[in-house]
Image 1 (cartoon, one colour):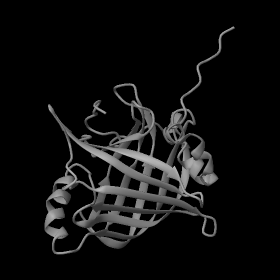
Image 2 (image 1 turned 60 degrees about the vertical axis):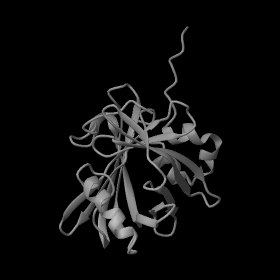
Image 3 (image 1 turned 180 degrees about the horizontal axis):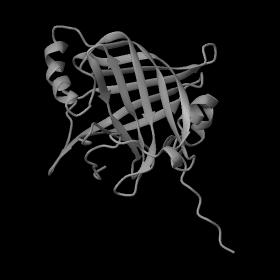
Length: 238
């Protein structure tokens, strides 16, 4: 008698191990989205604030990156308050056979929507998540998630790399940004709360947003991956 192979654990559960069980149960389900759970997750809400670093030093430093990034759905080139927000987390296997989960964020600004795309895979070392940014996965960041004492999730970024054709270089700290994402579940309101902050070690705060949303789950087998959600180009280099 043979035993069917066990489906791989979700990305965050694999990387966090026992620490995953310390997350609030609602966060556990949300970050268990994957091929083994068979669920996709859509969050809808409002970002109370989307901001950019506003100092005289940061603004000219940041502007060209935001302008270029907007063409490939990296970062958000607008600021505002009370911005309707959607995040789509859908699992699939990429062209290299890796389990992948989309983290596609859409901000509905008054002058038109802006997207911030990311796709996450398990790093080959198995102890971190690899976060590919943008429509062409030009940027790759290492993510290290941990559970906080209150059951919230804290994600910190590590090394960033830029890939384009034969180019594969580490992004220098002088122009790179350290990302910190905090997500929690608010029992009082029944909403997820998120705060994202990207800072540069020399110039300070660069970009961020904060707000809240509710989620709905869907059977990934029936809904699949909608057109335009997957990146245009996929990158194998870790």
